[in-house]
Length: 168
Image: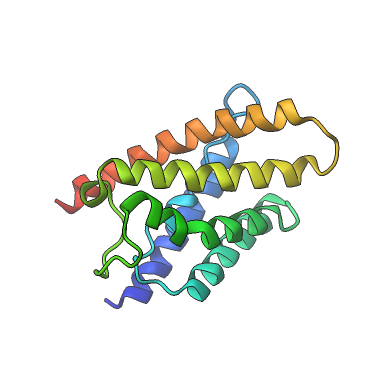
């Protein structure tokens, strides 16, 4: 099967899980783990920036359509996609990884965790700032970023371990 077909299949599965399960799961009315960031993180190292942005926009817009949020997830996901190459460089210490694989905890070790935290932080802060849009509730924005961020990082790490276990 081609890598594009696998990527589209992964996209659909992650969107379905996010929309049908996780969007209905609010812990303490402010924590909502966002699994769909896993898709952006797991795109191959050599994915061109234009493709990252396109996938990020498509993913965010799809989530927006199902959630009734006018472009907020799209904007936050595009920004996280744009920052991904920089975060990969910071997490791996290499400018251009020389392989076509995807970032994994097995390959990157603690660098994978750093990548996940940085992408999650940028995405969540952007998303919650857009949701608040000028109400000035900075404490709530930072609390939601922190709590949902912790839940998202935990979910992404668990998902990575489960995916790695299935592959081995």
